[in-house]
Image 1 (cartoon, rainbow, N blue to C red):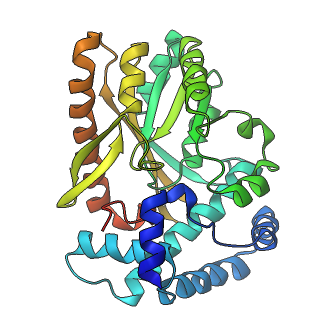
Image 2 (cartoon, rainbow, N blue to C red):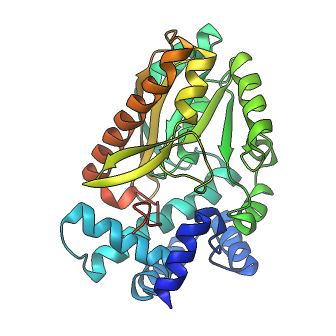
Length: 309
């Protein structure tokens, strides 16, 4: 049964996978996170992690085991599977808190923030290229230091419709900055418009929505081949804006470490050379992501078989 479900998910893409959790469960998490007593939510996250690690019928649990097996070079223990789920649970729980009450309650160290600061002071936009690694909401810590910073978020909202619907009520301002990828041509127009205004566009580049995407590239990742989208690099080259690799790694309760690294300086690339340049960037991105994962594997939350096995 699990194999059939896995095969179906690979054929239709991860956007068709059923979202775990009911609406009332997500609303309960939202209520709990709004006033989080540590004596309640910390044991609860441990319990959630245990259930996740034990139930290997879940596609997400299977994806976690597959990834940990590759990164560790052996089958993960129950405690290691729990740790992976627990870090993700903290990141999701903190997402609610970050959207609802801001970053003041967290300790976020920032490395490379001057890259963003310089671009904001010049009124220039950029592509913030991340992954399903750590917490993207924690990157909003820079909003407090850089009032002029405006970030638009590219994402597939239908895949996580229940959680998106529950969370958007926490911070409508952030929700309004989302560029939905369900309508590809319209999204590209919105991205181009945002970059021309000096805004930043945040994209996660470690997963394809489905097999119908044309602009994609095979890259080496953890000893095998995966496919990643080329759109982040083509967008940046067309708009002549820099690409900045970014992530905020969960370190401990209420503590994150954000890092920004220049990946592409926005220099002009002739149109005939862009496909080749994008392919090279895609492999460089995969190499950088592998470095993040080897440094802290439990912060990568891409719970799908992206190797299509």
